[in-house]
Image (cartoon, rainbow, N blue to C red):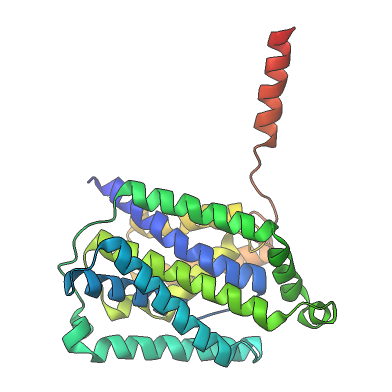
Length: 288
């Protein structure tokens, strides 16, 4: 597998997790600093089930996603009723607790040294098809009645509740789905790079995903996907260390906030209508 294909697979997998953050932050206005912990749970659970217990890869992924969703439900039940800034702090604490758990359970996870000897089962086709399905799911979710209600909650939660929208229920469902996205991405990544370690899934990764969403535009699915490709490819192209990467990301966000407050793409979405109109007019001309 060439270097460029390897990087492309990593970007595709990470973009799935970013899409989960897009749903949570872009649609519900929630800032979770513990999203990366769900990715870590998905990575470790799948790796342990396959390597130590010999479970089939697809079954292990499903179990890992179920674990992440269940944990997200309990975390959400305890935190989604509090103010947004306290929610961010609570999820930060959850993320740190998960890292501590993965680090201290040495006999199961390998501790700070990580978990290795994971077979490379994530093929390019699996990664890219998974990303395409994730994009299609989020696109459909945003256009649904439930998605529009979520956007209403982000704009004005009190007004949305007056209109009969159950804000807690909507936030819970989106939070759980975003956790499932992160867990699935973690499983694919673990079986792509063949190694996982607790430090990878800290709050910095969660913040990186939030930055990507705001960079592309939290009102634009297209912007989020393109923003993910740009910002996730940049470290590979320029070989930044993690510290420099976050610094550069923060500078980019400051520029975007001042020059493009709604993100690089604002509310713009890619559309097939111009292409369809072009081909339709071309067929009409040929018919004449």
